[in-house]
Image 1 (cartoon, rainbow, N blue to C red):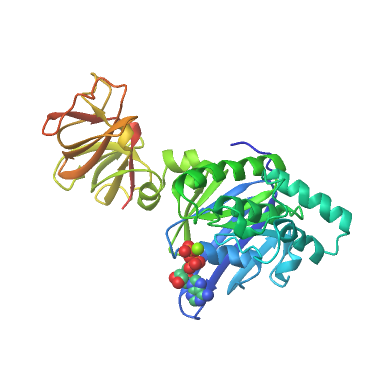
Image 2: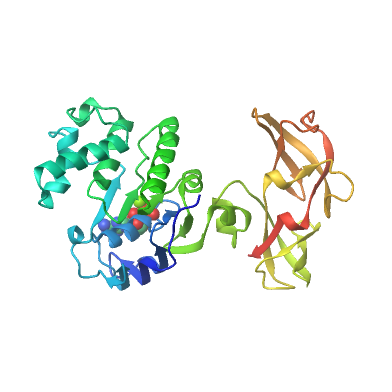
Length: 365
Ligand code: ADP
Ligand code: MG
């Protein structure tokens, strides 16, 4: 996704830490620069510190250590309502006794805007989320998806420079969630507003973001655009968390020219890209995507070749998923495109399996 992103940090977390109890740090050392116009997603498992980080940016929690800057200014001592930030949460938080239009008017009235301008802005925001004719309804008269669109409109109605969203689609069913992902993404592209988005759903993050910060246990494990996170994970956690991944563990035997030879736990030898191993003699985790593994590879296609036993073959329409026993692992996954001539494979077959050095990453154990 492309959008006009300036190189200057609009939001900056500088050495930010947070402890709720004075003992445990739930955010350990957050350093992130977010340029104006970016859609940045904080992605990670439950409890990894995403909401806490967002709440510190919003001003509802204070950092135990470090500084947060907005537009070059430290906001540690700026009250939440003076930060000019729009917010959307999972539970919509619409006022049930007000109509949709009144819900949207509220943030404008708080800002002492004149009646005519309020009316115009409310209509514009409702049109933006395609709810232009629903202004007189109450939230309870709308579907979950429509309510969430109202919440998005309300966060944008005062034209903030920055919008924070914390799992805003978590309560919606899968189809609606996917539709809303595109809607929010398109609104971002149209308005050029800076968005910091929190989710635990990796496909949501991949769909929507310019960059993704992968959180684990209060730390960012990797911060990169979606393609890079998927193609070039820097550690085993990111490789596991983003997309499907095969993991093989072993010990580095030799390194030369950026390529290492690894002895797996069962004695098999694999050649892999040396990403960040500690060198010969040290343990490593190999990461390999299921769609980069070939069954019956043609001559010269793969530098790594083994014999695998198909334990399970599952037809999934667009592809076939094969669970194999290979290199001492029986949970090795291979994805075969449905268009492939290898789809005649059946459970119990033993066949050659291979992958290229370029698709196999040796990571710090
Ligand atoms: P995430 O949004 O990634 O699920 P949170 O930021 O909500 O993570 O939580 C990070 C950690 O901080 C968790 O261990 C959580 O239990 C704890 N925590 C969150 N909010 C509070 C709070 N208000 N008081 C005490 N502990 C909290
Ligand atoms: Mg959370």
